[in-house]
Length: 234
Image 1 (cartoon, rainbow, N blue to C red):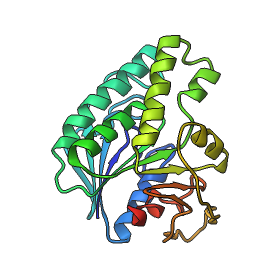
Image 2 (cartoon, rainbow, N blue to C red):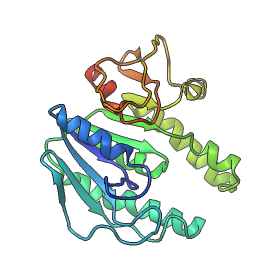
Image 3 (cartoon, helix red, strand yellow):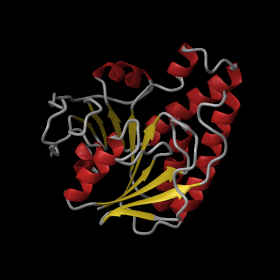
Image 4 (cartoon, helix red, strand yellow):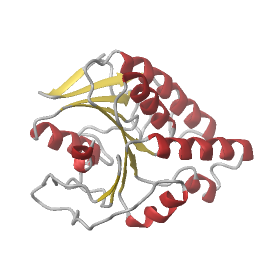
């Protein structure tokens, strides 16, 4: 299976910060899949360029395609927004050139990259896996980062649409499930699955909750809970 991951803030194994998606990708490759990552060119922590090559083969089966982005994530709200929107467009252009994709996977926050993943999934007629690591824009509103009512309304509408559009929704906390239910993600069945961190990463074989074509998985942000827990259902 060829998996296309849209993740602006994707960190490699030798970078400081949260590298869980790098570990997820490596586990998927070891399980026999191929992973292509559309990532940003700048470091999330420093804002400095981290990639100059057009394509980077990290290891056989795992390739990173750096995409252009403007501004720095931590500089200001305006620059952060500019960075997210510029990556959204450049990643879309880069994703159109990636061939023979089976599944498109993305994560939020930030939410704009999920729009890119949806557009690519729609054009390529492929399923979309939407991994929710935090509730946006709810968190941004609660923290006072997002205050404009028109922007809040726009972001909330986009969030609800993307939840409905995804074939699979993955969450890293069971506390998110009531919120998702309010947003129209149906949860007809559910069963628990241990996903705590272990010294020997494992790859679960079964989904946690299933509702038709949509699956909601409960777990933690540990290397033992890759998003492909739900993919056998697609």
